[in-house]
Amino acid sequence: MTQDELKALVGQAALQYVVPGEIVGVGTGSTVNKFIDALATMKDQIQGAVSSSEASTQRLLALGIPVFDSNAVQSLSVYIDGADEIDPRGHMVKGGGAALTREKIVAAQSRRFVCIADESKRVEVLGRFPLPVEVIPMASARITRQFAAMGGTARLRLKGGQPLVTDNGQHILDVTGLALKDPLAFESEVNQWPGVVTVGVFAHQRASVCLLGTPGGVRTITY
Ligand code: 5RP
Image (cartoon, rainbow, N blue to C red; front, side):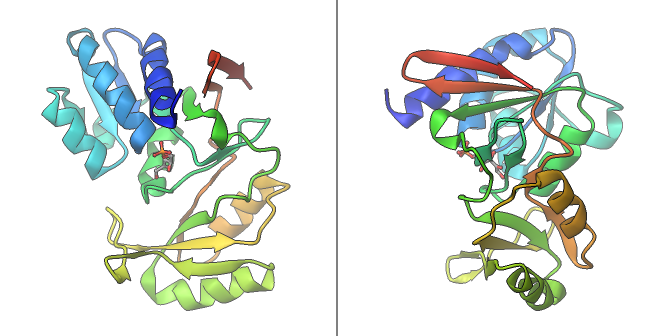
C-alpha cells in the first residue's frame, strides 16, 4: 500500500469517531484532507466543523460542510488531525503544515483528540522531524539563539524564497537537533519564551486515540 492509500484508510476509519448531530473539530494536512473527503459522505448527519486552517476551511466549504467560528462553539466531543510524529504516550510533533497554533486551539476545546497517521509517523522519542515553532517575527533571532543554547538549530521556514507567513500573520522556525525526552516539560518551557506563539509539541493536548495506517490495516492505539 502506498502512503497515500494508508492516509485514505485512516481518514475513512476516523468517521466512526464523528458524533452524529454534532460539530466536529477538523485538523490540517494531507491525511486530514482524506478525512474531509470521507466526512463529505456523512455531511447531512453533522452540524458542521470547526476548522484549524484556512486550507481546511476552503476544502470543507467546497464540499458543502458548514464551518463554525471556534468562538461560537463551547466544546467539541472530538478533534481529528494528523501528526508529524507520535510517541508511545500519544505526545505529538505537529505543524508541518504551519497550522499548529489553530490546531492547538481546536484541540484544546475538544474532549478527545483522534490522531490519524500512517505508520511512518510513529517514533520512540520525538525529535526526528524538525520541530515547528510559530514565532512573532521580531523575536525570531533571539528565539533561534535560545534553541542554540539547548543544542538545537532553528531555521526560518521559507515559501517561494520568502519567509512563510502563517494564517495568523506570523513566521515558523523549524528546529533540528533536539531529542524531546520530556515533551510535557519542554512544551511548557518553550511556550513561555517571549515571542513564541506556539511550539509544535502537543503533550498537553496529546492524542487520546491514534488510528495508525499499516499495510495490515488500521491499528487503533489508545492512550
Ligand atoms: C499541519 C500538521 C499536520 O497534521 C502534519 O503536518 C501532518 O501532515 P500530513 O497529514 O500531511 O502528513 O500538523 O500543521
